[in-house]
Length: 206
Image 1 (cartoon, rainbow, N blue to C red):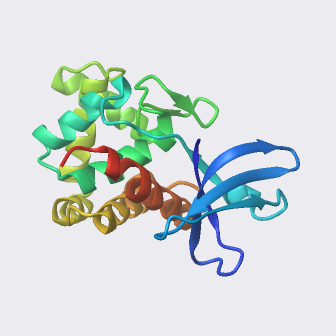
Image 2 (cartoon, helix red, strand yellow):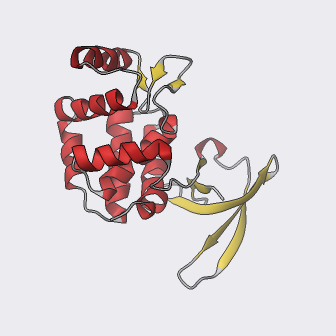
């Protein structure tokens, strides 16, 4: 039932999307539908860009891991559902919403996996502002602080995103490239933008 995104065999600059029905060492079986309701079944060869295949489970808006994050982004940062979807898509990929998540062999921490010096920036900000740096509240406040002071251009993009599927894609794409900046950032930005557009945005209340 996971949503899967992967580079198209016909055009590597675009993404295909499907619903996984089974997977094993021989391949990944998935189905796709079209506007006329026709369902087709396909298989991904494991040798075809397997390092660039991304799976995302659904993220219901009421999920306990994300409800507080969604509320903060909506009520404190005044972001619309598209911008929220873009951030949630990235947080899901980075940490699955757990504020105590560790990554990169213990060098990245938190919901956004702040790495090395940025982890220390999180600690310094929270200590000065009176927050627990390992708490969700402290990390959300730090995210807001960084968007206000370090990434104002990204904040403007998020604030100006149209509340639409395309806006969700743009928010997820830009947040990944600018704020998260992972390895293979362009490919990852495509994955996360598509996840925000096709999976997260439809689940959020308007």
